[in-house]
Image (tube, rainbow, N blue to C red; front, side, top):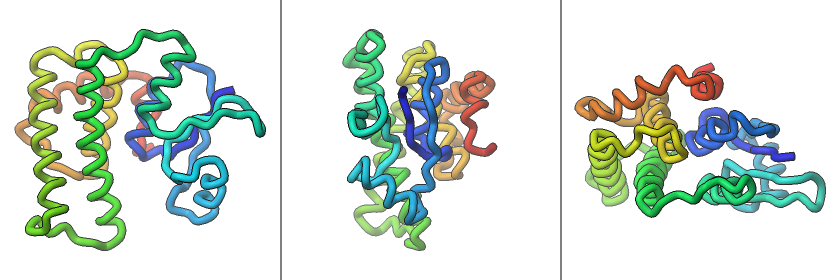
Length: 195
């Protein structure tokens, strides 16, 4: 039995929940900010990061960490085609923006105000801006027309940005249209963090 551990608000978890929509699995919602859940998580995953996938049960279960590695594992397990190098680059772009935004979000939740004069904050903002502009161009070129894993990841990123009000997407019309065109998919509405 596949068990996915995660948080309903995480964009990294959501991409896998969407991807696994038609695959039998169990989902365990982890309250990562609560000490008891973190203590339980560290027993299986010393990184204490979500998502985490467990394949099997008991002491023989295989635990896989990180959304990208989980996706690769699932691909191999179900004999799905590998991503092209272009798609791998798309994921790197999406993950780069996601990582920067998650760091900024966690700092904000910790009460640390962003100071764009400081190198850390300046670099994160520059990275997010550059990546989103580039992704907007890729959508305009038609590189996200199929509902494949990179498209699911892009949707999860854009929806999380909107959900958390993390970045002004005004002017990124292709990304906004992509988001609008996919928001009524059953697996998308079923995993909406607003519910």
